[in-house]
Image (cartoon, one colour):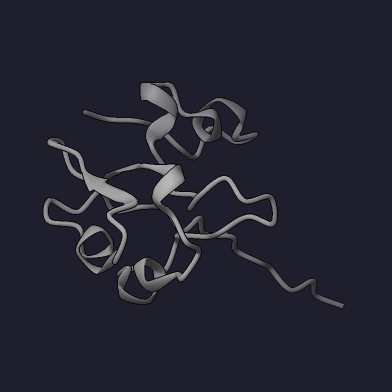
Length: 94
């Protein structure tokens, strides 16, 4: 019997130059970054998820613990996903 091969593809922020998620946020909880993507201003988030509705990849999530939206910020330039990938399939390029 042949085993089914599964493929897991991470869905990550595309760091849009003019992020639709920031434009859609009614409380300005997402602020566009100069290099693309957004900064999260947690105290402004009301959890409406309008940001995720317009996100191209639908990657924004609201965790159960209310700390604001979760959006990839590249871990300050040293992404944990790159460090822990068991097959070194991820890399960060400038």
